[in-house]
Length: 416
Image 1 (cartoon, one colour):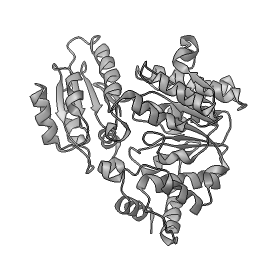
Image 2 (spheres, rainbow, N blue to C red; image 1 turned 180 degrees about the vertical axis):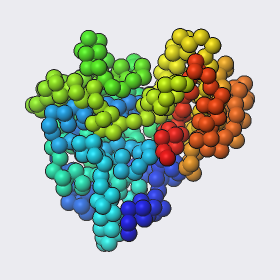
Image 3 (cartoon, rainbow, N blue to C red; image 1 turned 135 degrees about the horizontal axis):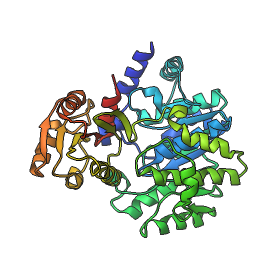
């Protein structure tokens, strides 16, 4: 098998949540633990930082990884989902896993006499990353949770630091329909004796985190109570978007927590990690400016909390552009509760309704109907590229084009 055939096999043979949704979700650690034993428990051969949260976990993971890399540590980074290339999910010092390693792993897996339950796409590709990190002898690996925390496949690791960015309502069919319930699932990555950092909390979620830390007998740092605007601004973070202010603060406190447990990280390394995070880690899709005129921005924010931040910032930018119009290229996944999301969008904007090229996408016809019910001026396009071209053709230099609603809309926008 070559690389293309190996990837097609993975997509075809294993259920992938980001493509098909609930049918691919397999909570629980039993399969991950069995897989790990099959491959010699590779996660025990490197030190890890575990990052969970509803929003911001990719940003915080990348900031921590970039800082460790800038210090000179060989650093693994595991995130999901990918935007354009499957290999984005696993990197060492910013370099994606080689195609040959993907092929080798798939061939070995297919040839194994494995008697356990069939793993999900996420479980097997996670093990691919873990084994690659072990074989390359990384010093540290920053591991982003896939969904939740307590029952997430990645929770087989025993990290040196646990980080939870924030809690908002997302994947409620799996994690619970209250903030407290969701916080309980995310708090499942807090382990006995392992220090933890919480980026944001509310009256509903703060007691959950404190109780879990007390139960685990570990220290808990509440980054939202340690905001240092001067220190955060001095880091001159490369990640833009108003919501990144809290992520920067969370990552800064997490890095300070690593120092406190003996990880050597200089101020220069921290500053470089934040200043060059995209270049160092390949991070993209978060308030990424694709074009300056008309200003074209894409962002993977897809739940109520993330979109609210983005819409507020778009309105702030638009207020400084006389005669400017907001043009949204949007699409969602089929199981997204758009009836709670669409009312947040401005009525005086233009909407270019589309769908991502995945089975899980909400059809553009269905989304158009929902938008028109809300009185949103909408036009239908069968592909993201067509929608982008139409928005650009109608835009003036004062307008803003925003591409988002789903990670997969952004993936199609960035893909060739």
